[in-house]
Length: 313
Image (tube, rainbow, N blue to C red; front, side, top):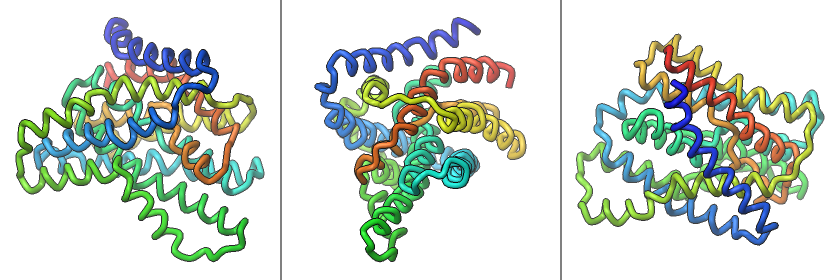
């Protein structure tokens, strides 16, 4: 078991550590926005399109319960974080939104593919693609609506059509469009030309290493200040989320492999999309940045424990 855990996690954390080291040594000179754009707008969408376009129709049907489970796993910590920020820590709505999305949306895009691939192999590609798509479609509007609302309130503008705005912003993102197109290709029964698969695969194959390296860069760029809200956020992300997944896979009686993939996905640490959304609205939140760093560091323990316990599932 120790051998399997080491092979699953050591390359994963090594790649993140190299990104972190590069970020610290470069002292802000590393083109983080360009690297992130390459990942989110090109490499990852190409990979997600290929994974979903090549899936069997029956596979999509067997994953519907997984999608519902992941929605619950993300929304429960999201609303819990919002409540804590607003009513316990008295945080401004825009900052609360950034923290809630950071905590509720695990880093599926950067960590999901390499982690699940190392544990479950190629069969997990569809699971990760659906997880990333679900997270983008559900959590992006959840965060953008609150940020847009806070912005219009501060500027004195109207609060109309916030949902429509957030949905439009979400559904023009390549990371959302690509897997949805792939699902349509699969449902239509079309087979992608080999030349197209090869062409998209060249860029798509860079996703795993690029994603982990860019995560390290993002961690290196975050301000750091520990407080009670950070620890509450880490607990929601690293402990509560996988426990919710564990309870739901038992209640829903999911097949063993899908259940294991769901629990492992839920144990993935905080993602950076909430922070990136905040920056686009001029909100730089130190607590969210610190939560991202601590969740990622402590995931060494939580992911190791999760993979170990999955051996007994």
